[in-house]
Image 1 (cartoon, rainbow, N blue to C red):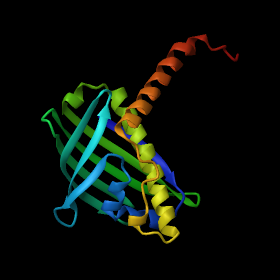
Image 2 (cartoon, rainbow, N blue to C red):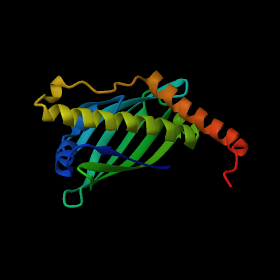
Image 3 (cartoon, rainbow, N blue to C red):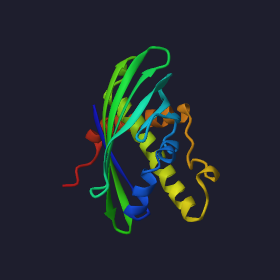
Length: 194
């Protein structure tokens, strides 16, 4: 399943690129993610907890930077993990690109996600909604951490700007799905402007 999104950060491209070079900092911006070890220069061990509807799943695995092109400001990360209770597996290739946007930076993210087991039973819509919520939180946290660094705060002094629990993520994803249903239901009843 291919999921694309983008967000803007009010900082120059070079500054955002340097921030993305600090993988522990980047990981701390994604709700539910925890690095548990470094397995080399570009490979990390960690876990991700996410709530899909009423079920909370926790995946443990590895993530490796497979491509880092400073000139193009493009980074590719491959992650693979297994659900802690043996209810499935996930693999994902994430491609992030940075480009100038006004005085800030536009970050484009493409996720090629493959799920098996319990996680695969959820529809594309629900998975896309949960991903959208996570990316919004990630974008807010990246912005907050870069801003804090500008003010001279160390990473240890900065807490995530929007710590999101599993319930919060699941609820916001459900509200997104519900709003889509309402828009589809009420669309035929909208007056025609012509």
